[in-house]
Image (cartoon, rainbow, N blue to C red):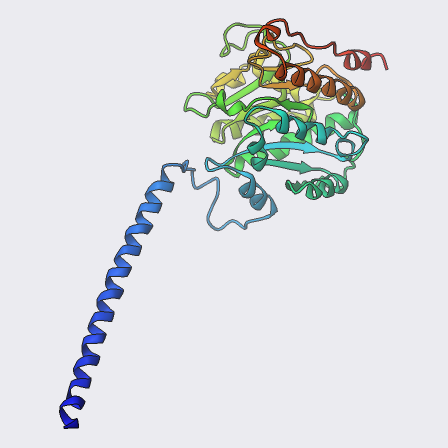
Amino acid sequence: MDQPSRARVPLVLFLLVIISVFLIFIGSNRARSGSSSFVTITHKFDIPRPISFMPLSRHVDDLDEALAGAANGYKTVILTVVNKAYVEGDKAMLDIFLDGFWAGEDTRSLVDHLLIVAIDQTAYERCKFRRLHCYKLKTDGVDFDGEKLYMSEDFIKMMWQRTLFLGTVLKRGYNFIFTDTDVLWLRNPFHLLNLNDNIDLQISVDKFNNDNQLSEKDQLINTGFYMIKSNDKTIALFDEWYARKDNSTGMKEQDVLIELMKQGAFKRLGLGVMFLDTVFFSGICEDSRDVREVITVHANCCRSIKAKVHDLQTIMHDWQRFKASTIDQTSQFTWSNHSACLDSWNE
């Protein structure tokens, strides 16, 4: 009676093997199908980059990791540079800068894409304590940890060091918004800025002197806020810009860029440049005429950190006053006087 049962055992085992192979085959096909769909979806959000920007054999260093950690899906990152003077004090400049993201409209999530570039150990440690994206920039033994007064020798050196670093970021294939830490982000600028094929650089000005945002005529460029696309043209601009450092004694990097523009460098390199209207991207040099449209406020035309801190706090109070006002009151809104910054030039 046991022999027929034993004869069925190999047959059962054979059937189990066939079923298992069939299930594995079906499962692998589904996995491949799902992977293909994922690649198709993510490819829509990927910006192709020339291989020369990021060669496969290149070593991934701390900067690569920092940029990748902060960038969005379009390889775009927000950058600011700080030193010890900007992170210390009863109310540090960095704290006011971050307050702007908190109090602004649709700006809180942008901190996820903000990379703080620290040029001394104190600034780096303060950044890490705030749980932000941080990168420690090596400055070859140069001491940049104290306050550098506007147009002092150390201030000019620090600005050129910044230019060199930002050119490196472009060469790593990243688009970026560079913002000084004394800029309040009151609204999300990405709603107005863009990275289309025709515009490579969108840059702020101290005073908007022309109704045409594409015209270079009489524009007073300010390098404290700009958005730039990574490509061969912008990399060439930064290389040419930095190459003039040693032949521009007493000039800050911003003055040299203005000189390059006047000499036709933008047009020669084929750059599409847009100059940002101060209605939207304003500053102490020139207030926005419409608080309902303003996006950023820059403490430009101001000599010391102490004065910047004072007037930026006043601007924050103005913003909170606007947010709490009725529609009728909004039409009567005026900015407070920037008294500390005005007085800073007499110190």
